[in-house]
Length: 358
Image 1 (cartoon, one colour):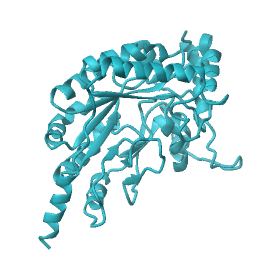
Image 2 (cartoon, rainbow, N blue to C red; image 1 turned 30 degrees about the horizontal axis):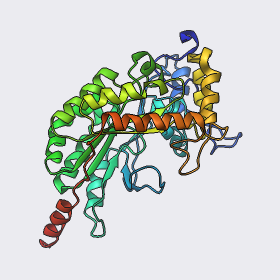
Image 3 (cartoon, helix red, strand yellow; image 1 turned 45 degrees about the vertical axis):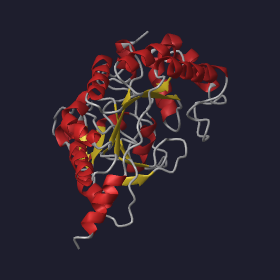
Image 4 (cartoon, helix red, strand yellow; image 1 turned 90 degrees about the horizontal axis):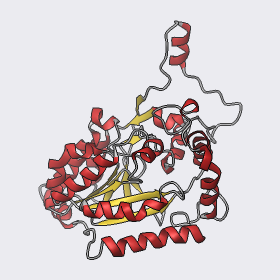
């Protein structure tokens, strides 16, 4: 199934695609690599680079009607996890990089995120709504172990008694268990753990630098055991890769304590279609055409799906089978369970009290 000789180890993407914002005459220079080459030094081109960026704001209004969140924030752009299907890859092109290997190797770090968040929460005009960390890239990706920006932001949310959501597939979240427990005490936190397979072989090629499935199930169990509400995202479902695992995955996460599940059907927009096609032809050659055709059958004959209301759930016979299996899984394993609605009143009370001091 896997052809290791033609694949780059430890990465999802196997190439750098052309940035659509650059015309063919645009020249991109990497002066550091050029200098090392001239000096005779060996450059590890597969090494991750952390690059500081300084945005003016950190909280983003989510305009897409089918995403399931109103506001998001991202401490990092790019993600070392290397999930081959990741929709966030395209956003790296706005920064002048490729959605392929650059997305995994060049991580943009927003060290001022906590200060920007606090500035946002101090606005008189702001009315409390859940802000989701990782609307684009994982807030607990490997960079977080070094920079601890997510932890700093959780401390701000706790200080202001403001509701926050987290989406991650990294076991590093357990590091911040004390903060999460404190937030959960006032119903201020909801965690989404992404689990796409129960097979380590599948996980390794789909998501090469993520936490193991065993560790992720342990995270669900530990968070749930401490009263922190957990939803598990079985996402994306990819026909003939993990679609047969829907019921087993649902059963496993329910037994671990998850209160609900969500799912999407894989869609390969922009550069991701090229990146995914190149990847599957190098790692799963025997089934590549079958998988690609089945994905196309879920999206009107194309890998590139952008229609609101259809892009997440797909259409056609295979998509219907997937969606029906998820409905069955909810009935079978999540009856009587539900994620809580987070508390916004404490922030409003805190802010009102603070304003009276001036």
